[in-house]
Image 1 (cartoon, rainbow, N blue to C red):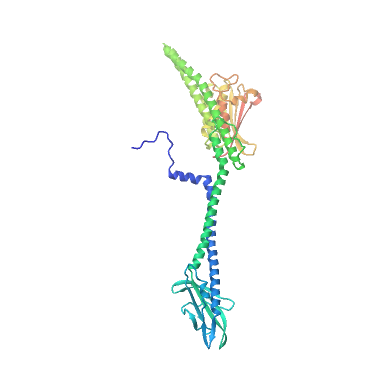
Image 2: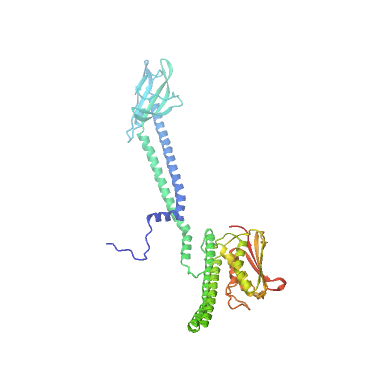
Length: 485
């Protein structure tokens, strides 16, 4: 019984797979593009050579037949009123060869009477002249032959006349000559084609060698190596590919760094709420009174809410950081999304006795965006404003029309609060993940504005921070491109 293949061994690709790979091979395609036209030209050349050889052999045979006919024609004489033609051996000896061709002839007097030869030899299609013999193909007793007919002036009792001499030969010799010429040409063509194929394979192998070296260099790179690929021995045609690979390596490296930092920050941030939950659970277990147990459960519930919020924001941040090309966008109504968010947060505003206002144009505000990210963006802005605005303060959410620098239309989201604001020197840092400025409440995650910036960039928009009206509070303005997906 045959042994089973070892686990993990690479399976041999099937024949169809190998054929598909061969068809996709650049070397195979280039060889095909080179050799197929060359082979087609060789076929055309061989056909042309056959025709040329046939014409050349025909000319040789016609000259021999014409020479034989002239020798015979010189022997046509009037002997006492009777036309005679002595066929000299030299007239037929010139046709002797290894092909054993049959030679036939027919000599006619000026009046058309048969002087010598075969009476069933076909007459020429048109009368020959003294200066212009007639060559033609015909059949003699069911065998193809080549025939030449010429006219010879002769003098007899009736005066000057013209005798007609017809000489024909079977085609064995002519066919042999044509075949020899064509075979020689065919052999030359095959040699040229084979040499061209070998040269093409060699040239392509040398020409494509940089591609192989580039592939091996990329495959051998260390996963952490983000340096540019060496361009010392790379043809100019491959430089766009190398540039694209370098750009891809940089993007992947940036993404890997982002994920590593995200995981490290998330692990660090999750430790605190988990520790609080464990502490609250331990306190609840140690309590002996219903009131103490309830306080512990309330604290545990608050810690779970904080952890839930942190995890939700982490997931939103991870989704937003994938970039504009990775975020799936659909058609949505910015006004409707904002109203939904405010409906969820109105209770929070009432609990803190904050006046939450909303202004927006009437009608639909179409936007091509990710519904969850846009909703989280608005929620983060409003939650941040409600969290840091003192009780009895005001938060205003306004939607409006804007125009980008390139003239493209867009929507503006403005959130204004009457909180402490953010010093100008800190406004860039507040967009960093887990950054907490001075005066931040202890239950903040430091992710709100980071989510805002990533979500805005994922939709190719902008976000700016400024002082509120009369230098009081904070004003956040987000601009997003208008339109539908």
